[in-house]
Length: 333
Image 1 (spheres, rainbow, N blue to C red):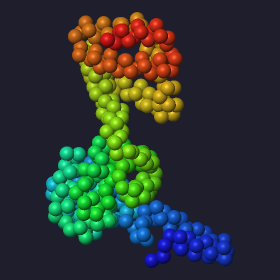
Image 2: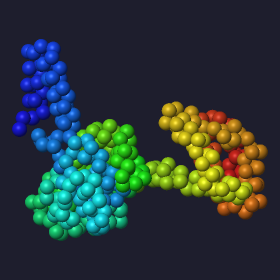
Image 3: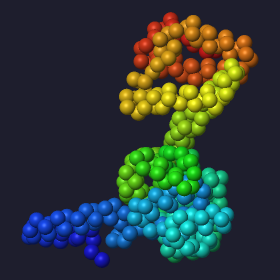
Image 4: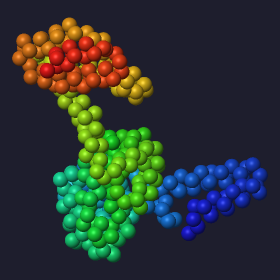
């Protein structure tokens, strides 16, 4: 099989020596080969398998198939989930580690974090070194490092973590959320070459994380994603305390939330600051705290904890003076 570079050279030669019609035909095939060069390693389109057929496994499986990668196996503890993903990928696969690994170049381990180490141990125990050697194993946990795949690495598998910084609503449409995002990578440099190609073909970007920093990286993602859900619940409970349905209250706030997110995306955090703390409006803050206290709501701690961070951010941007900062912080105690 000719290398991508040789194909380009041949197409370019013929391009220079043909008329405009044939040049357009050659250009078409040039573009086709350029696309496939993004998913080819060592002259072959890469084949992949999925271990764990939940929302993330289905999302990755479908997204890669749509981009030209070849699915060859799915494993799941649930026979129903395994068959469902196989049907989505239009493949037939033995629901065993051997059936998944033997024909794959890439294996994505998309099980729950608590199960990753067990999967690695079982693969190392059940499969031979010859079968695993030089294959690339990605786990997709945001919190765990590639060390959790130690047992696979011990029998010469190439291991890394490739974590999509995204949330996935379901098994059927989640694949759409894998484009135009960031992925966190940590692990073997040989796997990074492949990760770069995967992320590129998904029109996304790669963040390389130091192993010792993985927990901090994941904490940042949790604060912005998971804690936003908790804050929405808190806001809903505040509405419920004044007789407005909690869901309707959250619905009423969604345009505000979307605009805030859009502002952060377009202008950055420091240019998206608003609200009474940024204006130094002590009386309004006092009124919030007093009203929640009178109703005996347990949301006050959340309000004060996040409020302290907002005071810090406002001060960093010189929006209030030191005297107001002291008064604000006293209110948040």
